[in-house]
Every structure is written in structure tokens, then in C-alpha cells.
Image (tube, rainbow, N blue to C red):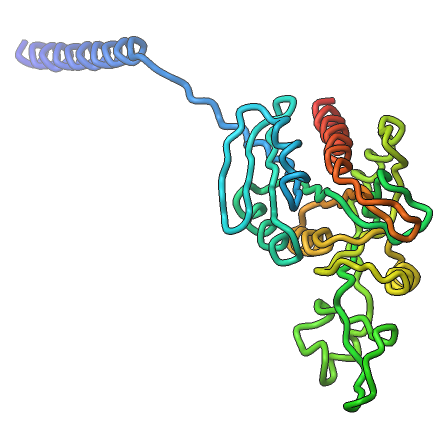
Length: 302
């Protein structure tokens, strides 16, 4: 009888423990179901902006005025206008004139805004006599047309610019003027424009009414050439269509950062065919670039 009682007692204890465990699990389950919750979605990667560059106010502020929700930031000599065009982020960089200002603004702009592409645009002077004031040159190539090494001449032998040699500063990390590395630096370096952007711009050429839109070579340098023989020499030996002071330096920095790039330059004057300076062409160029950018944005959403 005692043995039966003991078995019964153990069985009752087991049943009690099972009941307590089951109640605990049920209670915890019920508690989880009544907790409030929130689900946080994964973030989409931010859109990379398009950067539009122009050196002077007349070459940048028209485009900046097209933007919605604009804010302005400053860095060194550069001014950056941030906003949107057709809902897409745009940064307009007023770089300041010249190779140095443009290179600095391009590097700052890339580091700060991480653009998906850069268009450097503005006015230029014609080297090709077939081009008229108001025509636009798409930079199939750009070149720093002011990098030269002169031949050695003794005092009194004069200076002969037509005999100067090109000097490619990016040929090596060694000296471009003396030593074993100098000989390899005696060549022209061209930066090629983005083919997709060139083709897009050409497809819109008929919408531009101020002049023709053509492919060509943009020559850059901190100079303003008024010597017709010098202009003809650059046109013949470097293939320059126009000259200005910015595109090649922006192209060089964009290339270093692997950012697609295109220079777009309107002729504001061309002394090779008596084309007088017309500053209103700066607005015409920006209006054409606007069409290119809107078309590019539209294609992204297709």
C-alpha cells in the first residue's frame, strides 16, 4: 500500500510540474503576441548628383537659378549651389576662372558630393575658322594646351614658341624636364569626353537654335591668345577647336577619381573669322546643357 502511495505522489508531482511549465510557456507566448512592434525598412542608397561647372557668374548662375530647393555652400574660391532639377539632385559649381581654381573646385566637389558625372561648360574662343560665334563644341577631347618645354638656347638666341615641345606632366612621377623620364614626357595628353554624354548631346543638337553643335577638341590654358599665327599653330598641332581656361584641368581630376566627364563649350568669339565677343552666348550654352541634363535624368527613370 505504501508503494502505491509513493508512486501516486511522484505521479502527482510530475503532473503539477508539467502544468506549471505549460502555463509558463503559454503565458510567455501570450505576452510576446501583445508587445508593440515597429519594422524599419532598409535604406535606399542616396542618388548621386550631377555636377555642372561654370567658371564665371554668367557661366553658372543661369543654371543655378533652374534648381528647386536650392542651398549654397562655399569652399575656397568655389561656390556650390545644391538643389534638384526634375526631382533629381544637382550641384552647380561656380569654380572661378583658370586651371588651378577649376582643379581645386573639382576635387572638392567630388570629395564632398560624390557626383555620378561632371559637365564643365561655359564660353570659349574659336581656333577653327569654320566655327561661328554661338556654335557649341562637345569635348570629344580636351588638352592642357599650355604645357611646354622649350629647347635649350643660349643667351641672345631668342625665343621660338613654334619649336616648343609638348610636356606631359602625368607621364611619370619623375622629372618632365630633365633626366631619363623627360624624353617620355614629350607628348600630348588628351582626356576623352564620355561617349554616352556626347551621343546624348548630339541627339539634341537640332533643338539648339543659336548655332551648330559639333564634336571637337577643347584646349585649356591660363592664356588669352590674340595672335592669329599662334592660334593657327595650336589648331594644326593639337587639333584645338576652341580655347578656354578650365576644361582640361577638370577632366584630369575627374579622370583621377573615375568620374564620367564632358566639356561643353560655346564660342563667345572667334578672331580667326572676325567673330566678335558676345557674352550672351554663356546663357545659350547653359540652356543647351539644361536640355542634356533633363534628357539624361529622364533616361534614368526608364
